[in-house]
Amino acid sequence: MELERILALADGPPKTAALAAWVQGLFPVESTPVLVGGAAVELYTGGAYVTGDLDFVGHVPAGVATKLAAAGFSRTGRHWLREPGQVFIEFPGETLGPGEESVRLRIGEVDVVTISPEDAVADRLGAWQHWRSMVDGVNAWLLFRAQRLVLDRARLRKRAAALEAEDALRALLALARRLGTREATEEELERWAQEGP
Image 1 (spheres, rainbow, N blue to C red):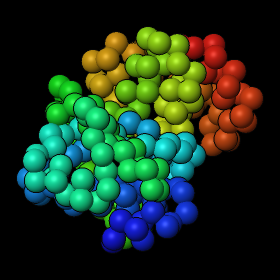
Image 2: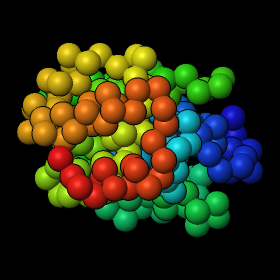
Image 3: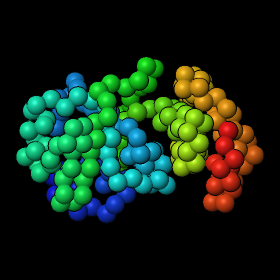
Image 4: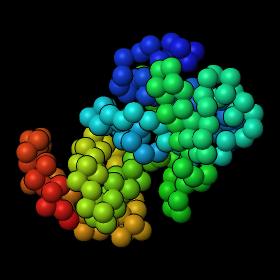
């Protein structure tokens, strides 16, 4: 899909997925960057969390930089900004961390290479445990609930342990047991995240 058509879409996961796929399509297949961060959370939660930027892990070769510039993006370090349409792209690193994995996620008609759901949950749990970031605690919960049927629990435990976020994972699993199939109210979720692991 052309960039201008993507930018005309309503904000939400279909637009985020289309924009991520557009960026990834600029790269050679063997070096496709991996979508991480808030945009990955947005896609995995179906829009329960929405972000305004796209973070990718990967190297931007000169040919891709030329294509981004031709599409109206300006570069400042690892950041790429396109004023018309307010598109902000960041490449915070060139490789995934040790033990992290990427997967292909289908959103509508679009395939996006993104960090695995287990890694996305573990990352948010780590931020919640170590930095007391309530928003990351809430995001960990939203990710867990949205992906609970496909999450590899053993791998999630391993990833949380690698990030020294076992207490946060225990708190998340305790909340899941307490709620069962019931959805948490906004107040319950906020109180839980504020209490911390």
